[in-house]
Amino acid sequence: MKGLRKLDGRTQQGLGAMQSRLTVSQLIRYFATDLPKSSNYPRHARAFVDDCLQKNRPIDGVSFAQYTAYLPPNRVSPIRKFMLFFQQIGQPTVVPDPSGPTLPPAMNELVLRFIRDAKNLRGDRSKETYTKALNAFFAYVDGQLHLGQTASLSGQTVADFVHHLKAEDYSPFTVNLYLSAVKQLAVWCIRKRENLGLNGQQINELRDISDIRGLAIERTFYKDSLEANERRDLLAVPESARDLAIMALLSLEGLRTVEVTRLRLGDLDFDRGQLRVLGKGKHTRKPIKFFAECRQAVEAFLRETERWPIVPARQNESLFDELKTHQIRYVVDKYLRQQGLKRKGMSAHSLRHTAGQLLLESGVSLEHVQQHLRHETMETTQFYTKKQTQKTYLDQMPD
Image 1 (spheres, rainbow, N blue to C red):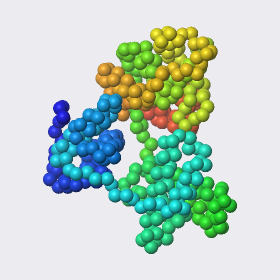
Image 2: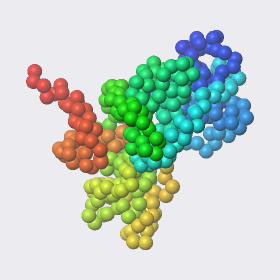
Image 3: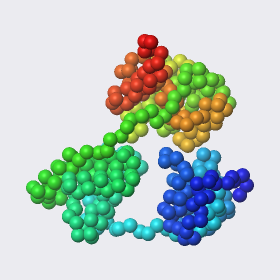
Image 4: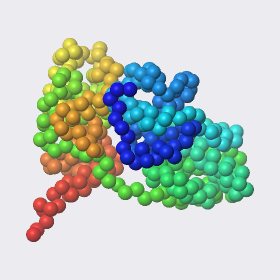
């Protein structure tokens, strides 16, 4: 494969000890050794390897070309880097991971019933995440029982499960997510206690689960944001009315990428200067201020696509036809690089942070910024003020 560069020194030092036969997890773990913990490269590489194994194809250049033929560049790069790594370690034989313990039917049925009834799990991805978390918990329970240990859906076992995840180097975020899933299952079981035939002791054990504490997570500014002049320069470079409208909705209105894809023509109220937004995991649209500069960009796009003025018959039509979130990220990254603004922590979601940060710096109240960004809690919005405090600390402190 052309354009592949040599691996760095640390990986090369470990090649001598590399086995000729690896499971998928072993291979991906070796690949991730020299990558940042937050890197998404291992995830994309695993998807490629799994696809090769499922289709009984070799992990080679032909499979690479077939798999990446219709992928965006930001997904091709991780797999290209993996292919370089795979060649450097001698292309070992790769086999599927050994099957984990199978959940007993009763446990599996309990999980399925809970997922079906969980009203707060609106999307398929949320349901998959909770199913994975609960399966991990019950697999732990089953493993403990096979070792002769006492284990059940109880406070003590859940506490032991949390310690187990921590010992296995799961991130605090993942540990707390798994814990939240088990806690919600416990609440559901108590509510369904008559249908499940639970006795008093079992109910008390379920109630004990609510007292289990998660791991502390240091809340930091995991996303960068642009300064006012940087945002102005960024909005000056889009090559099309469509791209400018997307960039304006992200950086001026502070919309999430998925919220941009959900916009309909009926959500645009130019007369009242309002934009109706369907947030992530929501079923109702919330109105926010439709800023003049953003209105101009969106109107220019509508004129170009011959949909201006908006007629009632087209209210349910999507603003951007078949636009996907990965396409938005690609567009944003392209323009960030053109302006020399692509840096660590700077992404499409950073433009949402940019909108909130600059609104605060312009004097808009914290409460109004919270309402505009549609944060569930004030605590989330307060991170913007903390970031602003850090920026101005040295200048504001008396000598």
